[in-house]
Length: 296
Image 1 (tube, one colour):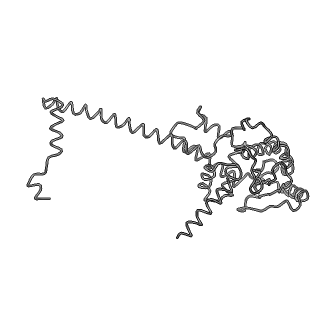
Image 2 (tube, helix red, strand yellow):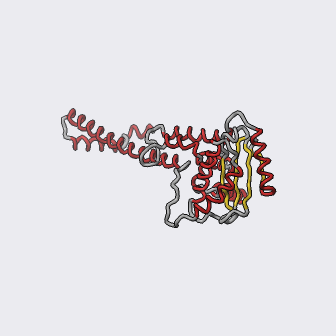
Image 3 (cartoon, one colour):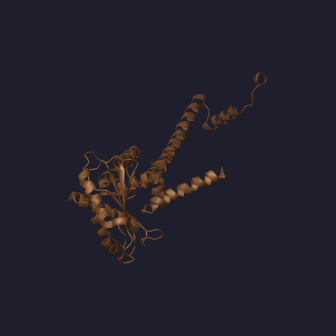
């Protein structure tokens, strides 16, 4: 039993580490893994889909309140569930009408340019995962991952790009990897709008983008990115607090209503309120009669 629990904990940590390596917070990673049956690849695709510009409009509509947490009405949670469900569907199904010729041509070009630093695999039968190793990338070597739906209209629809620093390395600044992956998604969208292949262009773009990102002054704030899956948790907390407040109001109303009832009963008996309350208290604490006791 102990070994099973240890393996479970180790697997959970491995899955969380695989997602946080892309720049996502531990909380975002855990929430995504909960929704994706603890599959780190599915969780990464979900978060990268929510991070991409294509999700901006839906997120802006959903989380439109001034405090940045989200809708305040009772429909908030159902709307969030629909928002995440759409992202999961987009991450795992893609769009119809594949352009297989363009995709195959891109794969041949990437393999000829990167040689042994190019690899690809099909995941879950629907996603083509391309890995471009960039060992000479400065100042931080790493890998460019491109996730493409086999049913997508590449290059008309952008892939899901992500930069992963080499083992043990980071981009130095907290949040820098997530910001970089957001900018990668923006660049991928711009290339798709031009119907231009993304693989090689994104790899060369990284050569300028990483030094630019890390070369900013230490006190310069990084781009602030919106929460992705942590928002439902914040909304649930808000709803919990609202329920507590409603319960308190209900208790106060009940107490007021009960007092009015006691006053009416005392007046009907022709006695004072205090005497009525005393009699009520005594009657509620009376011991059972001998007859009643014998029947119990």
